Image 1 (spheres, rainbow, N blue to C red):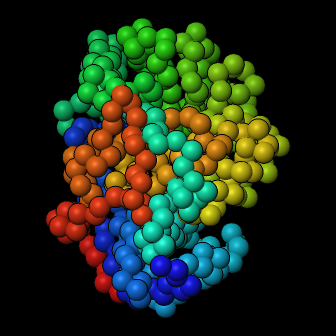
Image 2 (image 1 turned 90 degrees about the vertical axis):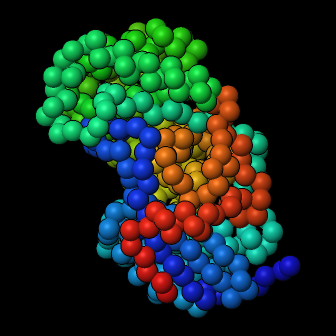
Length: 391
């Protein structure tokens, strides 16, 4: 069919709680569950588009309000959708939550458009250049049996025998899914622990395995330089956000040979100019929610690549909706060449059919159906829901 207009008729926004099959420990979190916001848009022709975004209470509230304001809008006209959200970056008064809320709505609009036109999301983005995408395995800072106060981790990190538990986890994930790339999520507490873990991972997984180190900006620039210099011999893929802000990362990059990546200090289009001038990073590990959706993400990827900064896909614990989106991005955008971040395999429950995005030999297949190409499990959304708005 040829669609000239696809008006939004009604919407449903649901905040869900997803259990993890592990305790995730990093410098930001100690948790065994996560929240996401699921967006469902129904068009006047019956097409239904699904999106997702952050699961914070604020992002959920903003997504619901935005969906309400867009009833009657043409889902095919992405520029008009963006204009109704914010004409400029200045007009977004809700920071990262605002961009993330819009990204969830915009993704659902793209999904609905793909279904109306009978085209996959990667087709809409110019066509898939590969059928499979390599994905990484996040490795927690410590393997513990249950969430605990951060203060209790100090003794755990001082006992270097506990390093073996982290390495065993990585070995198990490689045996199960065939991962060839791992990202260690430092808690930013003990330098000796971090070096011991990264050394053990390199020795156990071998020189051919790609290793990433990410303390979520937990260290100062001076401490980051000292720590990363101790790890230069390990030949990591990159150091991700060893410290905060553009200036700090530029200081580290000037002192080490290993590439520097960020997903924390360059997060929207007006940050790119400063990044080009200061050269704090080699890799822009971009999260589509912080960047405000697919249109902004494509602009970022093109601009970053033009100025010699390599774009890549950041994610953590998205549902199958967001995971499918990231696969389409990596397949369709030529500037994206590195393995995708992904924590999808850590979810103990999901809102799509189980094993629809299985990992084999460290790779996921790019869905080929219309829109996102994944089948939604409505009963699972209902079972996982903690709050909902019907529009």
